[in-house]
Length: 488
Image 1: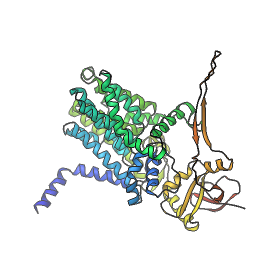
Image 2 (image 1 turned 135 degrees about the horizontal axis):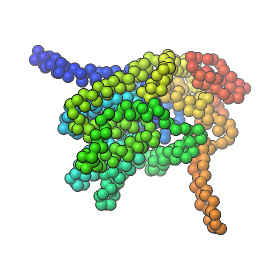
Image 3 (image 1 turned 120 degrees about the vertical axis):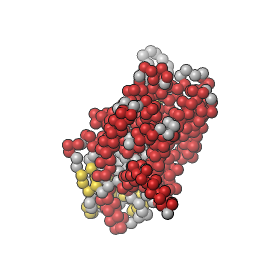
Image 4 (image 1 turned 90 degrees about the horizontal axis):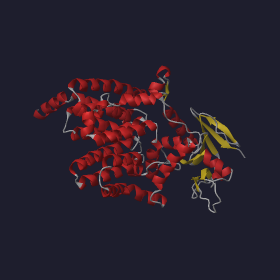
């Protein structure tokens, strides 16, 4: 009876926290949304290493996170594991900020109501874990700056390296991080930080060596992707800017409205380095505006800002966060059993006057694949008409009745006896009679070890339309997918 009374007392005292945690859990588990960026870079890698992926991997980000999660994917046979991990890491960020600020209740409530926490909770991504590690790296580098003790610098370097191992874009944040906090230190302090950053990065480097026979392959691929996107508009030359007014507005809405207090003259004198870091990172985010990047900024801002807020300012900020968080969750609730053109907060703002709700596309594709694989078992299917449509089917399909989903792009390369997907050459022409001319070249090829038997493929699947290949004619139309068979 005494235990029951204590339990009732605990629930009454903490009912708001219990309610919020329950709501976060329900959104995590029930919504069909998994994120809009890089989802396959982690989920499909994990599925591949678990032995459940009926296709070739297409990934440009860290393989490390997917590799670590793959045993859980094999055990549960579902991507729900990623969502549960996402929730755990986000709650650890909330608790870390609470702990770092001496168990300041203001920071706890601001974090638990922060829109970025609710925005990221259903995402299949490694950024949640990376942000948690980076937050503690920030705390330790501040301790180092205050005490000059190398143990804190070493811990910070290792945590930045680990954060990078899980999410490649930390490369840019880590450069800003090192410049902001070490610019007035002796050079060997920077060297020490860099050495232990490599120690933290070591697991990723070892895995890349085992997978690709080149320790820096992951870093090279990521940087090549950045260069290609910035200077060549992507490998197909049609990649535009991701900037939109709706995204910019969403970024401003997600940030605490009193963030300007951090840039006061008094705070600048006593807290210069964190301000420099926050400002430079914010500029980087504006250059490539994505709401998920705020998961690195918001915990640090709240850590620095919350103790400076008056009671009135705290309540005002909490009220603003609560309203925005409600708006953030609306698209996820819609996607419990449906599809929509307002998948997340930015697209909700963009399409506010023309929101469309339809039957879940994922569920329809699952039904189509079940029907196709029951009729045509252990077959190889070309998937199109977009180059990466095969990845969508391979991501959704769980089972052993498909031999392989093949990209229509790879099939066309085979038909044309080609291997190069993309190549660029840099060759500046000297204006003098120089005997030498330097040139650099790079590109993307099909894997030389491609073991797919393209000549034996007799079936194709089209997404929303028949597959556009000669000698292939439609056999049957399903809800979304069109099955075609090669004639002759």
